[in-house]
Length: 247
Image (cartoon, rainbow, N blue to C red; front, side):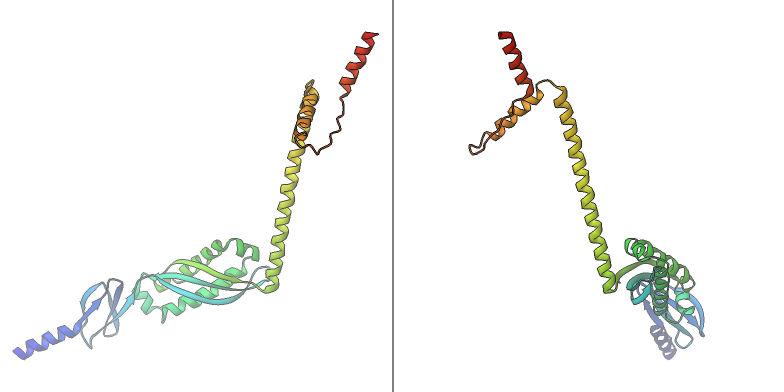
């Protein structure tokens, strides 16, 4: 009797399997899938049953650098990182041999295809859109494997040296263009202000005289300056009228 109780206790002890919080257990009986086991201590009968642990945490997989050709026939080396997690351990174990390798290979192929649909300017200026497109395709294709793709980030886009020089020249030309536009807008604004000032001085009697006196006062602060004062025509006419009156 004691031998039987000891044997049963021994079998129970060796049947205990611990599943951590971040794991799930895929349980088989006689080689056939039975159930998914949650965290805690679980009984797995030796010989008859078998369990495979599956990590359900988010995984970050580095997608190796790939040479891709854009829509406008520019060759570029691109690498990315993909974040995914297993939401169905049964499918992740029973539907695909190596889920991490399969996701990585699928991401590489999808990345080349998506880049081929975009021009170089679209790829560089809308990198987030390309990432979202890759994530959407990979997430849809990996759904039968019990995988949920959270995010895809394009890390580096390496261009050929001649293309880098071309882009640098284009950027320099764009900066010069903006500088010319800003300078011309400033000159246009200054000319408009001068025109308005001239109209105001012309329409206000004595305003031009006052402006002349103000200018003389500004330049007279330096004794080395030589001032040539132009007498306004109105003053000369005033003297002419005074002479006629005296006569």
